[in-house]
Image (cartoon, rainbow, N blue to C red; front, side, top):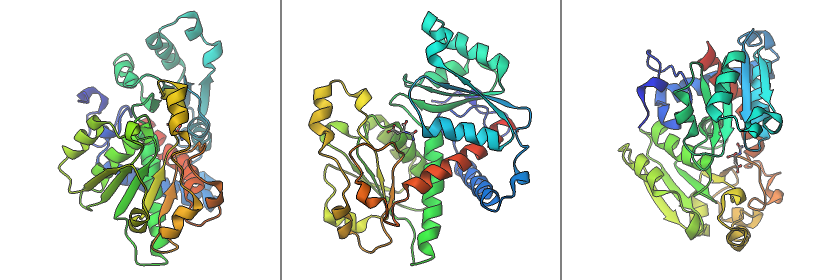
Length: 332
Ligand code: NCD
């Protein structure tokens, strides 16, 4: 259960962004709309439409786990909105002297107006939010959640749906989450958001993973409890028949760093890969839209990159615009 304290008084305005469960359909629509406006202003060079939104604001970036896209897209989003990022180098910070996480966060709160944090412990943001008076954003909590990624993924699904619909009669109906669904936090948040956002548009959702890397039952239960009319199918094989049905496939890497042993990882490593040959079973050359939160390791064939269905670099680009929308919502 999410405590009331992480929602502010007015509905549809959050004081922190900790879990995707805080997001309503209306709020996700609003954020996607705003991200799309930012994208348009950016591509038409109307920088004055956004470059003073975070004037005089400082955003703390605390990454206790590695990151390229999430950290740099937040940093870029802050700079483009006219604010200032303040990045703590964890390795040379007082946390290596044994300072507690709540103390580090309380210190950073004195310097900045909002804190973006990634950490290896599931649920840590919820725990820390009670010590803080300024907004906290979850940029990944171990094998828990990644709410800002799910929002940019939804934004990408909507954008890609519009792109394909210009060519053929198209609406997303079948989505597959493929790979490490056990430890992958992006898919935990995304599955929930598919239930929240598409509540009136029934989807068929395939969850395809090796037996030992299935979507945790607690995530599925939470989704099912929302009472939405989606069909959920769990399986271990991406067959040509399934490929033929898919509108979107969301590939994730095996989360090596979260496996109990190297041996277990090596056993599964090569068993999961989306290859160019797999796409020959798709029903036409416009689908499925292929997504990936990146980084990729072995699970997504580079030969797919030049295919127009490969949306993962566009998805990454969308991340900056969605993060601009999120920062604006929390700081204005
Ligand atoms: C993901 C993450 O950190 O959970 N990366 C990202 O934020 N784009 C996915 C991953 O590491 O596999």
